[in-house]
Length: 464
Image (cartoon, rainbow, N blue to C red; front, side, top):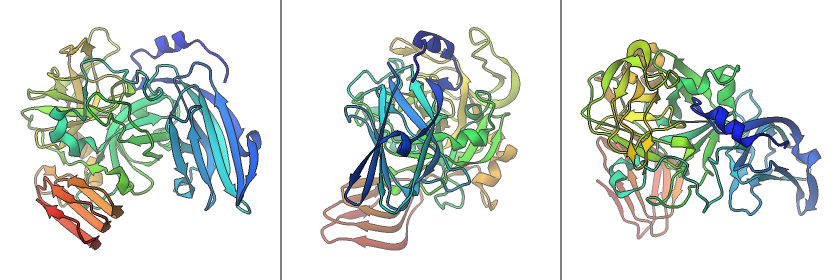
């Protein structure tokens, strides 16, 4: 890729909403014709390398990604410390769109390796390469944490009561250059429909393309978190590309989409519950990816207010502009903060239900402490009548204002010890083998089995 002015790109990206971390390069590269070919047993391996000097990471978007039944594709960096894949025919688009957005690979070189069997045909044409100039995704072991010091890792001991909800939160990479956050959310059918709630601003205003085109070119990265408190970098190898826009509103800044296929059970995703009431809860918390960092958790010990002010981060020192009273205003965070990249992250009440999604604000770190400035979140209560109701309650069966969260394990083999928690836990065609001990815990409502449940001898299986 051609050289460019790193410092100028960093300066131009300051205060961008959503967070802009990369410079895109439009290309037209056919992996098979531009790469090298090596004949191996059963087929051909095509390899292509792309370098963009001084990039912290690179990501690519395929304009055409059509893998045959037995083809396989991997992407990796020069020292194999970051490997994405395998990709196979199941990653082909389930819609009319035939492209694929991919998670970033750390370093300034990315390699694509395609295995194609004899007498099969695949298409892999790259339409964009994006160069990370902020250092959002760097090599494992480097200083990967780009968020402020006052942020809290989601796997520290004080965050143990929030492990269900953290498994619903994802980082979103939009068109290879912008970062937001969001959450998988349950519906009243409790059918594991892969619904994702984020902020409308993430898909409005940065590009001239309509939101659906941006969604087609988005990658949703699950479980990007340090495995321990303040530990090493996380993995980006669990992701879903693309989706279909279902409903959105600029008034409360919400957007909800559905992924193109069921979320794999090995992602161990949680479908968070929600509350549509407008009564301010006693306290709140949010889980997010500030500055594209590994997952963090932030706490406010006081009730939010319903704000007639939309905080305008581009209008000076948090002066704000007049708006409709459809936002929760968090006056200040007692522990942790939010930053660019957290836009769209869910706001939870004390019952661990989503009550809104982050629009923006002025919160940030001052050293190891938050700066005591506000954030605002679009309210589920007001989004409900703007189009959220038919998505989350399609049969209009909701009684009251809140709905439970769901853990759904289907068509899955469990071979290790596991604690499976959720308000509602459903198993569908699950096999538990070996000497795995399973504890289904923190049930607020029920445990259900659909299809078959096979449990090997010697396994301890408990439901609490």
